[in-house]
Image (cartoon, rainbow, N blue to C red; front, side, top):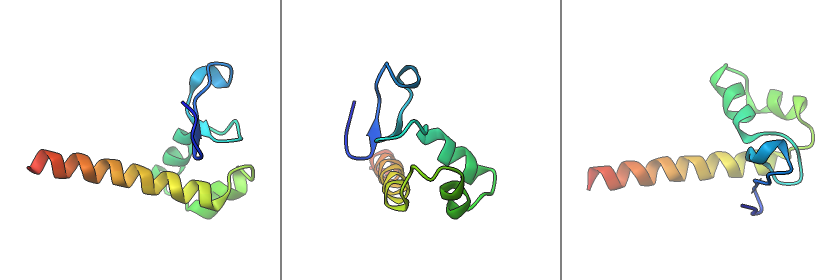
Length: 74
């Protein structure tokens, strides 16, 4: 799977979803936020990820969660 936001390639970290054009796993962003780190701290630690990429991934995750919630409520 490859799109503008996320790459998933068996040759890169065994197919773990990473931010496109990087080797930074998307789950690292989620883990950092869960641990209480702010987005700026994540971006400082992983400068190969742009702010736009990180925000777009968070927006996509929120949209997926909200669509699941809306489907379950229907």
